Picture 1 (cartoon, rainbow, N blue to C red):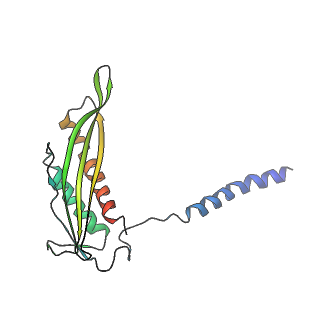
Picture 2 (cartoon, rainbow, N blue to C red; picture 1 turned 45 degrees about the horizontal axis):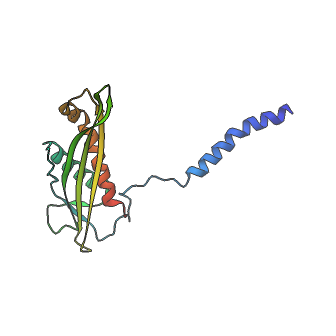
Picture 3 (cartoon, rainbow, N blue to C red; picture 1 turned 90 degrees about the vertical axis):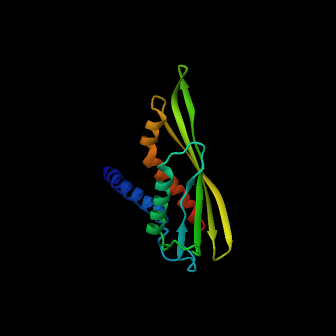
Length: 175
C-alpha cells in the first residue's frame, strides 16, 4: 500500500506537467514580422504626423506617438518606411480627445482622477483602394493629490506605449 502511495505521489507531478504541456502546446507567440502575415503586395508604409486636435494639447504627445508608431511598424513588420505619398499604406491620424476627469471621490475630494486620450486613425491601402477609420481610446488613472502636469509627466511613457500598441494592433489585426 505504501509503495502505491509513493508511486502516485511521484506520478502526479509528471501527469500534471504532461497535461500542462499538452494544453500549452497550441499556444504560440504571434509575431507580425513572421513571413506571410501581410500580403506580399504590401511593402511600404508612410506614417504621417499624428496631429493634436484635442481641446487641451499636450505638446509632447503627437511627436512621441508618431515616432513610436513608426519605430514599431518598421521594427515588427516587413514594411519599409517611406515619405512617398504612393506608399502601399498611408497612415494618418489625430488626437481628438485629451481630457481630465474625476473618477473617484472620498470625503468630498477627488481621490482618483482620469486622463482619457482618444486617437483617430485612418489607414489608406493604396493597393486595394480601401480606407479604414477607427478610434483608439484609453484612460489612465492617477491619484487625486497629483496635479494634471504631474500626472502627464508620470503617465507619459505608459500613454505612448499603450496607445502605440493599440494602434499597431488595430492596423495589423486582419493579418
